[in-house]
Image (tube, rainbow, N blue to C red; front, side):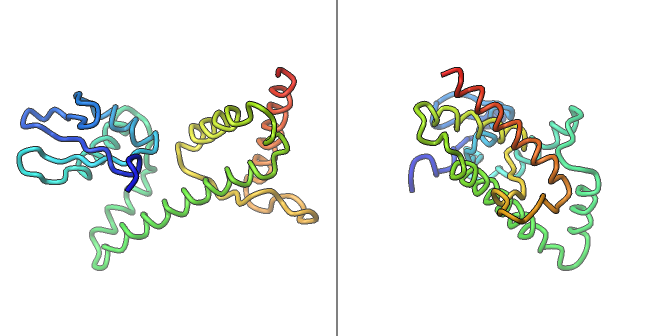
Length: 186
């Protein structure tokens, strides 16, 4: 397994301090949230017992963001989660959520590939830096979760038929205008 694919091992000491084994320093929950937002998987284990505490800490990160007024999950989703664990057969919810997030990540990846394939600026010097900025911007705007855009529209297909299609066209236009401005600066 490649180094960047290994989960970042965080050890929890008896004092409840969290220790990053890669950098040999203590980290906070906000640091861990930053690692995850950056695309890194983490594993948090109790130093003494070896118990995996990852789920507990990830839920704590979400709860802290919610308590600060950041709406991480809509109330109806939270209600559905609670309901799913109260009914027989509710064990299907974790697999459903995992599959849904995998589909979202794949959609985001395909969107980035399609944007790169349709971009005539790809052969321009410095394009990779611009591409990295676009990816960071998209990730920030979507919270790291991909949308449902599957690529450019086919000729003759008309305008997007899903809700928000006009917004997507406006964003594409703005992105194109920004790319033109950047190319003129170079």
